Length: 301
Image (cartoon, rainbow, N blue to C red; front, side, top):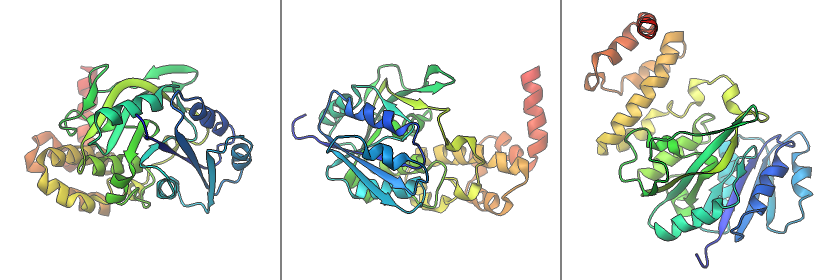
């Protein structure tokens, strides 16, 4: 692991209550070869003052106008000094050996474009390990990530990317506000091998400050809305096509049921061949309310 350095990118927006402990979790790593790039996305609280008060020369604070988390992460990785970019949200925490284990993954699987680990949720004071479809303790390259929802094993707080891989796929899509991390991991996995260690090495603080999942999801800001960006990938990779099509149908059903965003729902569905899937998929979108009643009855019976 000689000559291996990390650029740790932390996007920051109004996290004065959590940012100090987040930065401290990086400074307490057993692996100490890193820089920390905190990108302030126009905070209006004391977040930047908290960061500036931490006495460590490896911390760089970059200030920018508010443009969203994707914009902040792009600024971060494009200002990185090193080839390996680890992301950490300003709410979350790393276990002390996180970077050490990521460095081992990189050393053992250098051909990859992304490396990740398991994590736990902290919600209402309780730690809950995030369940993954990979076996406990799995460590290695994921041969076909499009099976069993394995791409969802990657979380921003436990994902490290090759800086070149991020550049090759164009970085984070700044038009996306929900699932922007999922979108970029997918595009990296479609172009590079991916490695994973299924051990919990970080804490995702589910109930801390201004988490996005507490907010309404607008389809136009959802990662699946710009479905056309995946056209070439879908035509070249049948496994990915089935994975993303079913992912989209799960989301689109929610909007179809609510009767909202009809134009975008119709546009995306027109690019999916529903005949490739069982009849229940077609029925779900033709009669969404009846389908909901039927599935509810099945649960009761």
